[in-house]
Amino acid sequence: MGYARSYNHYFQSLRRDKRNQISIHTRQLLLRIELLTNTNEHIPPNGNSKERRKYEQSIYAWMEDSVASICASCSKTFGLFQRKHHCRLDGSVICNQCSEFLSFSTARCFIDTNTSSFSTTNNLAVEQLINLKTITSSTIINDKQNEDYLRICIPCTKYLYNFYRQICFKNIQKDEIFLHYEKIIEAQKEYNHLHPTYLTIINSLLNGDTKYQIIDAQRTYQQLNVSYGKIDSISKYIVKLADKSSNINEYDPTSKNRYTTICHNIRTYSIQILKNFSISTRRVPNEDDIKQVRDEKKRLDHERMKQIIFNIPNINHNSLEISEELEPFIQQYYQVIQFIERAKLAGHDDEVRSLELNLKELAQAMSTVHQN
Ligand SMILES: [Zn+2]
Ligand SMILES: [Zn+2]
Picture 1 (cartoon, protein in one colour):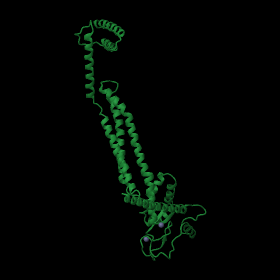
Picture 2 (cartoon, helix red, strand yellow; picture 1 turned 120 degrees about the vertical axis):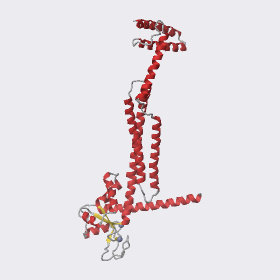
Picture 3 (cartoon, protein in one colour; picture 1 turned 180 degrees about the horizontal axis):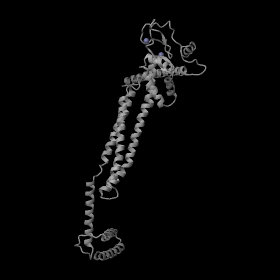
Picture 4 (cartoon, helix red, strand yellow; picture 1 turned 180 degrees about the vertical axis):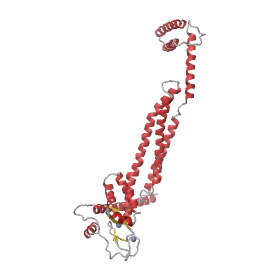
């Protein structure tokens, strides 16, 4: 165990050293780009002028032509048809095929990325950089008239490319995940905010109340469904992001795993939210459900009234119809009976007596209404 741990530590420190070296080298390249793409009256403009070459070599010394007999990248021997060129960033001698051309505008994006936060303008630079690989010499010649370029070698391009991938991961992709994750949380809040209202409407409908209509429930259900759909589709999109992002940082293979894990965890979390939603949200009841509930409620009310009427003296108990004028009296009568029961339980005898008097008066009044 002890050995395993110490070796682990050793390898970790090796990896860290390697990362530091790459990072230092990348910063040096970026500084040179900064100096080489700067434009002011003291710096000779780009082109093949002697002054410009001199300036470029003052930023980083070029390898002597006489020392290089083969291309540093492809190892082809230089000759009449294989002319020598210099990488402006590390001075190496390369052939034309092994030259990449970094436009000043793309180069400036590298510098800006280094100092300021990510923007969509810089985002374009990523595309440009990837396209750099597919630029043919003919397009370079055409574009060269409009745009200044730095000739750079393939290893330098790789450093820059890797640097940009890191920036992408740090600034775009990570931000993109969290931006989307925030949207999921927002949708979850929307859902939770609306859910109690929906339950109230549903319960009211199923109690046979007439405060809400089915359309109210349907409207709220639709809103809930929008939030539900958002959570589902955004979390699916995040998983797609994980699958798309290949090789986020060449020098840190675990970054890809971490990234993928985050994405999949978000999806798992979202699925859990959606499951809970499904369990706690019953469908909108249909017309038949409501009608059934309301009919049943009406029937029970009617039963209850008949029961009360049966106990009221001086009223014809055989009458099946309860007139509209009588209904409020019956309800009041029922209430007073309940009050009396409560007062009896509480031992408030005075209250019981006074309520019983009320009951008698009510019965009297009802009898009068009933006979008319
Ligand atoms: Zn070459
Ligand atoms: Zn180079």
